[in-house]
Length: 379
Image (tube, rainbow, N blue to C red; front, side, top):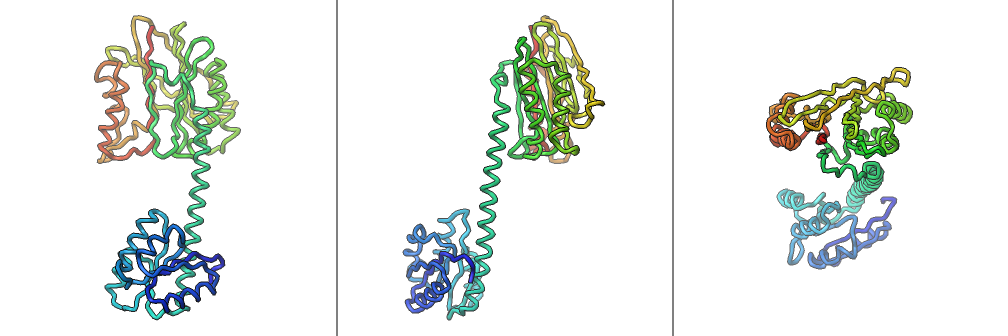
């Protein structure tokens, strides 16, 4: 008999058979609940909360097949094994029982050695199910904790600035892409677009050194190059050498009318004017964060000035947009993104880029996290 006793519900209308099976199971240490018909079995489910149901096929009123279907309906995703008991050896009966939700079939008169073996098999399966449920609950707890930590890092009122439009669409529950915005003491605004290696929780966890460093240093108004250097040091200190993070740091200074950019591995960072025409492309000037040693790290920043007479829109995205493939496997690409951005007023280039990706996918799922950021620069 199994080490852990089971709650077993026996549904049997023959008193002699019911008593014999009940006595055998109780002798084996199991908690046994009984019902003489389908109505009593269904109404006793909440009380018995069975781990296993032994169900006679030939019940008065509702037959065993109907009762099995109702048990499956009542318990929903929770799997409760059902073993049918029947004096009939007709193969059609066996097939009907399995189709109705049964897991096994046992002929009457019941062979107790065979019943014991079948119960032990179901017990092993129940233990596996319990392990899976425990694993799922622990995983959910850990995921919720990780999400709470990330949300605390990502919380920023600056992300609601009316000049900003942004979206992060994760491939899984957690995103390896993130966007952060911080207003500086001098009135400037610093933005971060980060793309961690891979997808899901591992990629999101890998962003932690970058996000944590940004939150601290951007609030202090630390220059972009110095911030990027500190991110690189923290990243290499906290993460394995196989991990790296593509990072785009941008600082918009409305007083000096200067846009500064440090780009380490982000493929798209563009300035578009109101005609609209492509004014400038900030190319990837540095490797992603986590690759270079402190001695080899380069912190040079690219700068561009703007004038009040020429409003601009800053557009940045991770490689998820360009890698988005349609049903034929054709990627959206940089060409598709530029076509969408430049095909109308610059004030709506963000919306056109996003719509362009959706239309290109043709209902196919994305193959990577997708992030897109735009900011109006004027005045």
